[in-house]
Amino acid sequence: MKKTLLYSLFTLSIASTTLTSCEEMFGDFLDKQPSGELTGDEVFSDWGLMEQFHFDTYNFLRHGALRINNSWLDAATDLGHTSYASGGVRTTFNIGNYYGSGGAAELTDTWEHYYRAIRKCNMILERIENVPKDTDLSEENYQRQKTQYISEARFFRAYFYWELFLRYGPIPLVTTVLDPDGDLLSDYTERPSLKEYVIDFVLKELQECEKGLMTYNTESTYGGRIMQPVARALYSHIMLYMASPRYSNESGITWQQAADAAQSFIDDYGSNYALITNESDPKAALTNAWLLTPYTENNTEMIFYRNDGTIGWSGIANDTPVGEGGNGGLCPSQNLVDMYDMIDGSSPFTEYDETGAPVYHGTTPDVNEASGYSDAHMWENRDKRLEATILYNGVTWGNGVINVVRGQRDNPIGNANATQTGYYVRKLIPETILSNEHGGNSRRLWTYIRYAEILLNRAEALNEVEGPTEEVCNLLDQIRHRAGITGNVADRADLKTKDAMRNFIHKERTIELAFEEHRFWDVRRWGVAEQALGRDIIGIDVASDGTITRKVTQKRVFEEKMYLYPIPETEYWKTGIENNPGWN
Image (cartoon, one colour):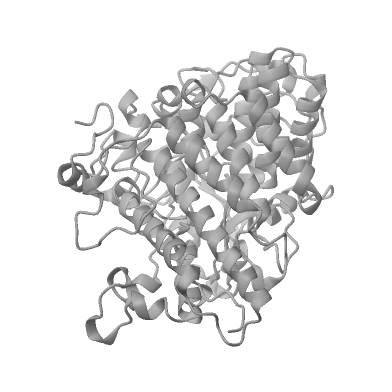
């Protein structure tokens, strides 16, 4: 059978996260035969059908845009707010309602989604050895493909278990194919320790599967495939988490080990990856890093990503300014705006906390007068990541100029979807779609890990080991200089201690990875979620004369028990599995 990514047949025409999977097409878990559909025995008796079944596992990689009832996970952090009242995180996370139906796609559906995906992986691992070789395959290609599929299945299973861990903590590790007609997890009620779950299983799987994955390849045929660098990148990501304050005591992983894990990626695979740069137009470089594809547009930054097809106006309408005809959607906060440094590398404010945010007095931090910052001109002379990420008053975008003055284009009276923060999102919203009366289209791949994160992983871990060394500063400068910042981190007098540099790195990680689903988990691993996710969301009003006034847009709720999700009620009552602390 021709080697091709058959899973794309199921995904390329789908812009949302509702997917048609092989499981749905071939029947409930592939072991029944309603309406003439194929059984599991039939699928695993044919190499080509088995390949389709395996490639469908890629469908279980979730896209972050609009995933939670048309809202984003970062709108449940201090980085943003959902403009329309029906947004899933607005009616659940943000008010402390973790049982609300609006957030089901994240809070409850995640459990079933990933356990279904894990079951597919287990089926491949149990049955692939008995699938007859395709007559068109040479023995060499057969062995190579089989090794690749086994390794991919192990990678996916480890990744899916990691995603479950972030939300629910250590839960039952199932490595056999369960009977879909039974209670599934009824025999798996014991919860493993963190070490057993993450160190002894997830990280071990990633280490062992890496060598069997295909080597780095940018041919379009393999766009989105899991390759050796992907496994190492995810390993670095998880090692950083395991060295972090929330997990280190149980994991036994040190900051040095996390630093070494990031360095191993740089040493072994760094020649294949690089930050996209453009000295004459840093904003364009940033936009390209987020939107261009690795296999046709030479995006050297993406490592682990979901290879989606093109989208049109319907794919971005919910997150586009109301003046452009959109629904407002994901609206960045003033909290995020305040995290960006000045273009010369200086800090606009005098003090930052362990979440990476400025220390507020009411809605305003103390200004660093030497930086030249003022609220009256708050968007001028700032880090270009601000301009590339956020649409603010006076910016030309799409078919007009952003105008959030009350009663004007993007803040009309009576439109309930108009921004409440004074901002709209720019990052990950392809502007080309707005051409030709919204008739354009664009790819928008969802990236889980890109090269900038590897550099940030190394910088964070190394600072915890050695403090603000020259290497730590140089790693951060690579990212900051790409964003147009002219000053060097090493020249900052306020970053000479490990504690100060830690807060600075937390800030840098937040703004570099904003709206890529990192902040939600980072503040948890740092042990500062109560401060970050329970703080007021600050916005602005812009008067007709341009005067800017800060305001509280929403008061957020975050309690200690919210570090983890509650086990879905159906699973809790059905299996008797121990629920997470505070959710009984």
